[in-house]
Image (cartoon, rainbow, N blue to C red; front, side):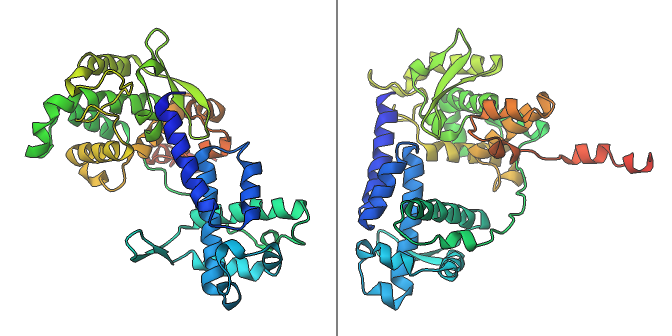
Length: 351
């Protein structure tokens, strides 16, 4: 693993540990057991969700308000029932969150996010119940709502071509943006073609190091979301633009020790936020009607849709291409396009 990936992993684990320290000791024991199987990012996510729950108990109940969060006991948790959990789910619809500057903002969780909280609490309570640390699991009594299927947002072939044309030519950019396009165009074009050719996540793209690329095998080694390494394969077109960029990478004046593939103007590793802004810039220039919808993750959706059509809907194959641990994640990318629906409009009259 490269120093960047190790540092990023350690940074996330440290952030998770800071959250865990604020909670009771048995929560720490829970994470010690879980971290064997979970990635640093998953631990951070679960820690944040559990802390939100303990904060809710402390802030909404006169009984729990008498205690510091770290002093909440197993006996206290055993007093809770399914109604308390349901009240927490309602709280998540619009709850206050303290900012670093002392101000308060209200966070509105989507039904999907609330479902994630339910899963996190259920896993936590199962851990306690199996070890006889509590007498029951109130989350099991809650019926989970069926979530509406999300719209799959992606670029169709025409919009994808318009988008790539804007990245290549700079057409549609503002005057100020156009000033930097001559220098950054090769880098940006390589980034967008790698996205659309491999379907990798933005975190995986910015984490790429020079020695992760194997031009002989047309492949890139990526550090996946779950903490595992995987290999993705790029197209001939993506390879061409990647080579073009690497040939002029030194214009960013990186220090010799900088191994990142994609660099910012300071010659250092490009950030996730920079890539997000880059995608928005070119979408605004090419398909402005989609500016509020297309993100780097939607370029991943575009790749998924392309591969589903190219493989005749082979979900297992696309699952491997996307690096999903579960095929359920892959099914979220299945969409019926307007063209596909229109093509079968008369089938009902044939019977």
